[in-house]
Length: 80
Image (cartoon, rainbow, N blue to C red; front, side, top):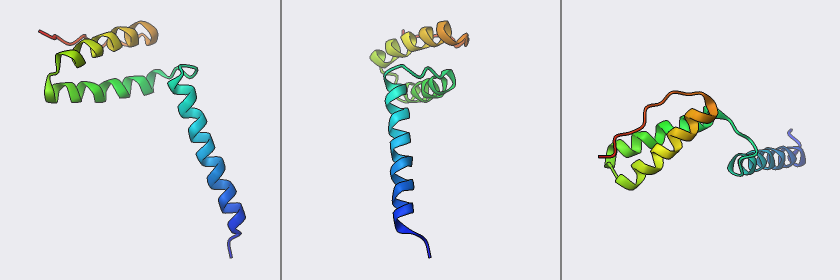
């Protein structure tokens, strides 16, 4: 039979670890280019669904930043 206190501790440690990683990433202390690249690809897909000009300008800023910081060569989006 499984020890329920061990299971609770394992769940708490797992949730705490995920929370810490999320906070570090959102504050910029963890700078992972592959995660940012994946997020940008998802945002590009969303943009192509609705062609929102405000989203386009924001995407271009993110593309330029990602290209400069991570050495990735993604073409900027034509907002016109």
